[in-house]
Length: 518
View 1 (cartoon, rainbow, N blue to C red):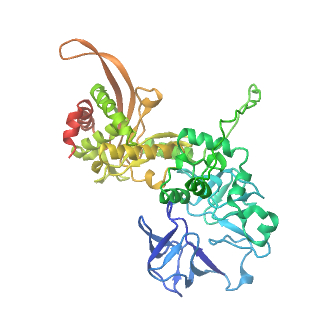
View 2 (cartoon, rainbow, N blue to C red):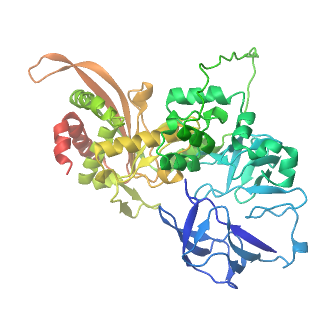
View 3 (cartoon, rainbow, N blue to C red):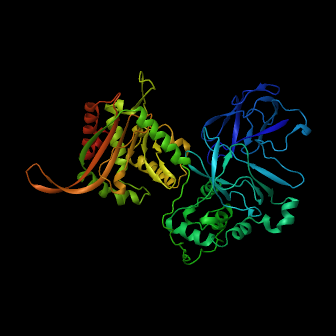
């Protein structure tokens, strides 16, 4: 059986790539996961692996040509199948989109969501069978063990079948749903207006769309796919100012174009008030739910950490009075430039400066504790309490970044993490972590190390407390308790105490931190 290999999603916003080199030729026998070709996007060089064993029968592009995402890249004869259409099993999942001639429907294949992800849970369907959808309209939310991901439609058309129920596990490279294209005979017969994306979108979301659009505008955020965001960038349009016509205020290409042409009508004048009817509680009741996705991954990670790493905790008090005054003096100035300057960027930069003199804090140890690996880059992770569980995205290369650069990265990662949509690349490669329990009101904690890192610090809330000054006078100071957890196999108490003293010095004396920043 011959099958087309469909070029999968390579990254957010990537719609095409250049064929840099073919690593196989027509007629070659290949195995699953064998590299087939190198492709170049506008962000990186990516190697495309095979998903089946078999023989390459056709390469659809020459070296140097531009290949399209979601289009056939090469054709191959699957190992163990007959080379005839009659031998093809009817239910066999295909990496390419399968088109049924009789019905005119096409299967949407669940693409690669991220490195190592082979399955995901269907959290919610945003459409139903029979619904008209438009290109880039969100179809469903799926949960991996790393993030909540929204799957958009590739074309305009009509949903004919949903292959999974809510809560079921879907496989990557298998059909997720079936649909007919707008403009095909079956789609036109079933719904003559399906060719109008704006009309279809408004029809599908007439109840919730306007209210959600106003909510999104009030919050200053915009829900949109990478393709829509790219169009907005090309037209130099701020998506936060565009009223989306989609579900929950999602912005579509038609909304952006209408805004650019000055034809977009204003959103509803006020949010509708919805009264929820709460059922009476049942005494003595209980419910059981499975631990899935992020929560399951965190459970495994924490058990692995505490069962293999001998933790020890070191606490200290830091006087932030001068740093808080410095930050307040700069806050409004940078806010005008669109920079959200919180205390955290100062903590991160000071931590990076201290790591320069204590590289052991930015290392990892192998499984049998016989080797240490020191990292040149300070990839500092920030624990975020997201709606899908605890996520720890990290800011890459903090040793090379200014406080303002770190502030911008922190804002981006925090917003994405709170929505559960942080990129897998931002979750990988962390070297040391910070947990800000003070944001929720805590003062002291014993954080668990984010293995394979060697240390993590918890920041308590800032408290105004009396302290004696150098003259013996009592004055109000702004103090924070911090709690370190270290891997006692390779970090001793003296090392973490000296490291903390240096970090503390940078925070208590901002001038010393500025001098250390070269």
